[in-house]
Structures are given as C-alpha cells and as structure tokens.
Amino acid sequence: MIEIRHVNMVYPNGVRALNDINLNIDRNEFVFVVGASGAGKSTLIRLLGLEFPPTAGKIKVLGKELTRLRRREIPAYRRSIGVVFQDFRLLENRCVYDNVAFAMQVVGARPRDIRRRVPEALEAVGLLDKARMKPQELSGGEQQRVCLARAIVNNPSLIIADEPTGNLDPKTSMEIIEHLKAINIRGTTVIMATHDREIVNALKKRVIALENGRIIRDEQRGEYS
Ligand SMILES: Nc1ncnc2c1ncn2[C@@H]1O[C@H](COP(=O)(O)OP(=O)(O)O)[C@@H](O)[C@H]1O
Ligand SMILES: [Mg+2]
Image (cartoon, rainbow, N blue to C red):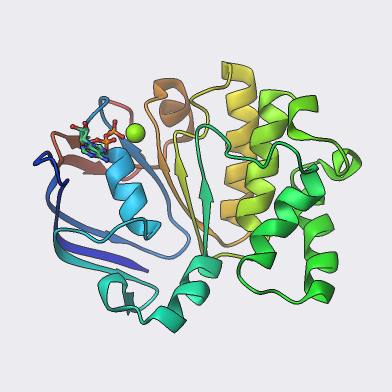
C-alpha cells in the first residue's frame, strides 16, 4: 500500500534528513520506525502526511503518487490517513466530541455521518462518557486516546503516528499501544515512529531503523536494537 522509491529530503537550510529511502509497506502491517533523535523519523512521517513533498524520489500510497495528487484529490487522501502526534494537538477550548467531529468537518463529511461516526470512534477508545469534557480536564493518556479517536473517525486505511507515547508514562504508553494494535487488527495499517525500546521489544512487529537519514535495518518481528 506504500511504495517509497529513492526518496531524499533536504530541508531549505541544507540539512539532509532522508537519504535514498526505499521501502514497501503492505496493507495491514504494523511498522515501527526507530532511530536516535535526528535520524529522520519525523521527516518520513511528515512526508506521508503530505506536510511537504520530498526533494527527490517517489512516494506512492494506495496507488496514488503523492507528488502528483491533484488539488481536488487531496481531501480524499487526507481522509484515508489518520495522524497522531506526540503533543496531541487538540483544540483546547473544544470538548472531546467537537475535537473528533472537527476531523470529519474539515474533510467535508455530512452532518449525519458525523453524528454517527464520532460516538463510534469515542466508543472504540473507551471515551464515550467523556465526550463533553475539555482536553485540560483529561489525563495525558485520555488526551492521546482522543487523538486516536480523531485519527480513526474517517475510517482511514493508514494511521501514521509520530512518537505517540513520547509524553506518556510506561503504563499509559502501553494502553495507547493496545488501542493501536486493536485498530491495526480491525484492518488499518499502522506506521509509528518511536524511540520507546520497551514497546518495540514487547510487540515484535516490523522494525525499520533509521540512522542519519538512511535505513540501516528492516526486520520482521524485530527488536529495538
Ligand atoms: N523543518 C526543518 N528544517 C530544517 N531541518 C530540519 C527540520 N526538521 C527536521 N530537521 C532536521 O532533519 C534531521 C531529521 O530530523 P527529524 O526527521 O525530525 O528526526 P527524528 O524525528 O528522527 O528526530 C535532523 O537533523 C533535524 O535537525
Ligand atoms: Mg521526531
């Protein structure tokens, strides 16, 4: 479902963040992207999230080459991926329900579908009873579960998560991972950047290790290092 060919990313300041990345990821895989700080994990995730185009190379997701997406194809692409951030990025003065609903509104979903899907997504992460609370009234783990609900509400084929447990304690982190595993089992591909060794070693999923913008290891049922 994802084909990355000879991808390079050089930021405007001249930093080469990715150097000739080649990668295939199949539907339904759960993939960890690991590596030290500065290795290029976030850059790879952000390319998939369409934050910017690569300097060179091709990225094909679900049969579409990202650099060739037409303007009118972009909303559909955004609907087909869910994004989870380390720092949650919730709307602080909106309640949990509105935060999740917003992800559907921005891609032009119908109100009827929003009223049906938002409670389903909140139910999936065990937060239906907190739908009217504000993010500040929730624990870090609960806030990240709101983000998971927001990421899955459009029924994406792919979830990309950049250090989603980076601000959470180990027990809460494992709860988030259990939710991501469940989302993956229900048929969504998951790509997660992390430097949480414990989680990677516990899950025994595919591990792609980056170093200085290059892939130095790609193992099924891999370990952190
Ligand atoms: N917006 C940016 N502008 C310039 N350089 C950047 C930018 N974002 C990241 N970098 C640099 O690119 C390299 C890879 O960064 P990043 O992808 O964030 O790595 P990681 O997520 O693995 O820590 C680092 O050297 C970083 O300093
Ligand atoms: Mg990063």
